[in-house]
Amino acid sequence: MNTIIIEDENLTAQRLEGMLKKYDSNIRVLAILPSVEESVEWLSRHDPPDLVFMDIHLEDDLCFRIFELVPFTSPVIFTTAYDEYMIKAFKVNSIDYLLKPVNLVELIAALDKYKALKDQFSKPDLNTLLQFISQPAQEYKNRFMITVGNKIRSIETSEVAYFYSMEKITFLVTREGQHLPIDFSLDKLITLLDPNQFFRVSRQYLVSFSSVQTALTHFKNKFKLELTPPAREDVFVSGDRITEFKNWLGR
Image 1 (cartoon, rainbow, N blue to C red):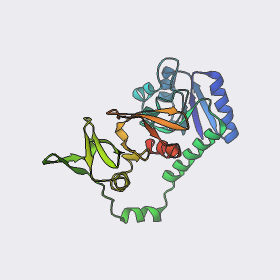
Image 2 (cartoon, one colour; image 1 turned 90 degrees about the vertical axis):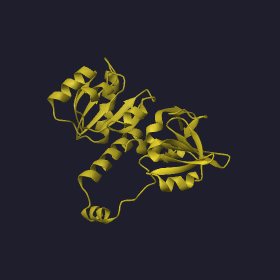
Image 3 (cartoon, rainbow, N blue to C red; image 1 turned 30 degrees about the vertical axis):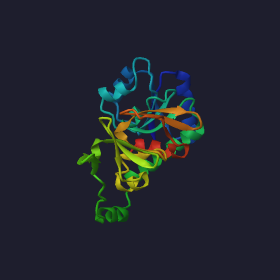
Image 4 (cartoon, rainbow, N blue to C red; image 1 turned 135 degrees about the vertical axis):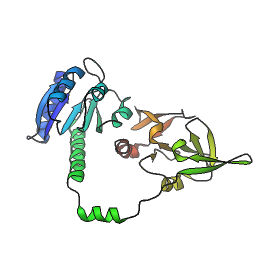
């Protein structure tokens, strides 16, 4: 496997390279690049590597500038001291997001995930593929009929930012910030909505992908989410759902 490390701290880059060699001595680190400028130049002159390790803060800019300046198709494992960029990372080529100091156990898990994804897409099981093609596509709910006073309003699912439950009542929150009661429980909603677009982060909240703006690490092994529009209370990803949540962001 060929990889590059985009990292402006030389000791950190060397430590990461050493851990990669412990994982698999056949891994080739083709370059260690400390800046956006050098990364863009290297990527413009070479074939894309199999995998990229990328820090967020580089010598001259944030790493996301690279994606704007050069065609970028390689999967990325982000390694950074900043947790506030997680959502933005998963909206590019990220397959994992590791907080510094990266330990070997987390790195192994991320590399195993990369290999599993690579095998899944490069070696399809034809029987499974044919079975999948022959199955009718599942239809998900695409609108909700909401009673407001003496009127019935139709709200497209694409207009929904998130759902939450309070005092045994479920509310739908639109992108404009309206809170509207609906006749579905969160348990029922997760069977009706596209799981690529909606994720139940806790017993009280079911959020859309586009509503999640920031995920910050919090005490007791939780993520605190900042949603758009803002929620009326703090929203956390339950500790037992964090791994699944990160995988959902990276779909």
